[in-house]
Image 1 (cartoon, rainbow, N blue to C red):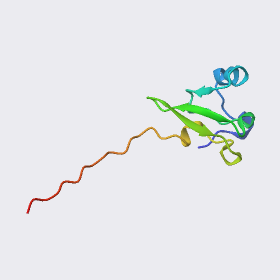
Image 2: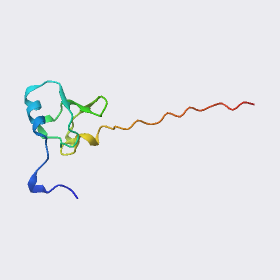
Image 3: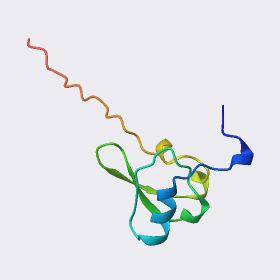
Image 4: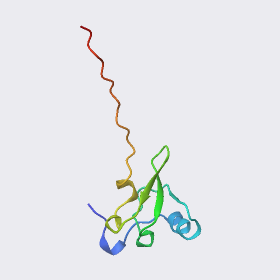
Length: 84
């Protein structure tokens, strides 16, 4: 069930302070919604191991940061050659 409209978007309080002070914005809170003040800016979202670069466009506003950065790594399967 989605969040109620009257409550507004969820944005971590620490995120609001970071937006005002820093040029390089590193975001640890993946559950926070993307606010409109980040339009056309680059942010770095934490994946659990490292930070991934994310450019905010108009289509991404209102969604959550975690939706655009994957945390899972695809398994690499080696193909072996059959001996003849």
